[in-house]
Amino acid sequence: MPDGRVRMSVSNQLRAISNGFGIVASFPELKNVPIVIGESDPEGCAACPIRTNPANAYRNGTMFSSYTAEQIARTYQLADLHKVNLLGSVTWAFLFEGQPYFDGFRDLATNGIDKPVLNTFRMLGQMRGQRVAARSSGALAVDEVRDRSVREAADVAALASRDARSAAVLVWNYHDDDVPAPAASITLTIEGLPPGPGQVEHYRIDETHSNSYSAWVRMGSPQQPTPAQYAELERASELQPLRPARRVTVGEQGQVVETFDLPRKSVSFVKVTWPDQP
Image (cartoon, rainbow, N blue to C red):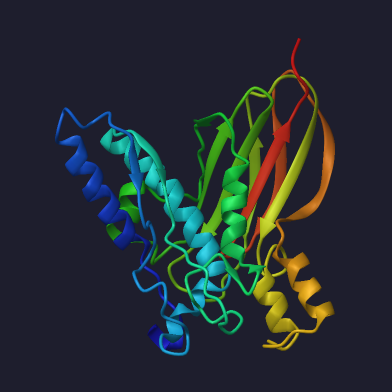
């Protein structure tokens, strides 16, 4: 915690994953065997609360949700680099009953209130079909993130998918240091869409969207929330749209453009859907 602020190191986790992929790839008989990574998390002490480990406060808010987007997307890229068959990965999260609200445990919910990191998984859960190419002028190279982490420029990057009726893009603005920084200005162009009617949905995790922790802090961090406060926290914990869904007509060029600002430690999820094609 330099200067009292949390400093992550996504490279630590990615190096461990990359080393494991390298070992698997070194055995021809294992190279195509499906890989599931268990306990794929930034550190080991899931049961260490902020009372004893103050830095674990990062687990409550958007530091963890943006880190998770970064790590999962880069894990896919490392699997491509090593040419191994990654089936999936598992976060080692627990349910801690009878503990204070937002006490910094590695869990997806606290006293029944979903944390922002769970909304990253909700975004990823809407990505269907096949992973497709995604390019960003603000993205760092995967080997740079693996070897040197994200300590200078922020990593503003994307993960994309497509199936028969939808295309989806996850966009994040991540940095290892939990410090204030200007938002990134994003022009997202989704290409290769079928011409015709469609719908664009845009969801966001940031300080004011999909973030039960910031809502809890704003209401005074109550350890015994009233029924009205608890209901407000439940609403704040849901995956929330940045803006209302909009209808579009995709032209012959097959493109949809979405422009927005993406604050540091934030994640956006943009999904385009269209009717069945004849």
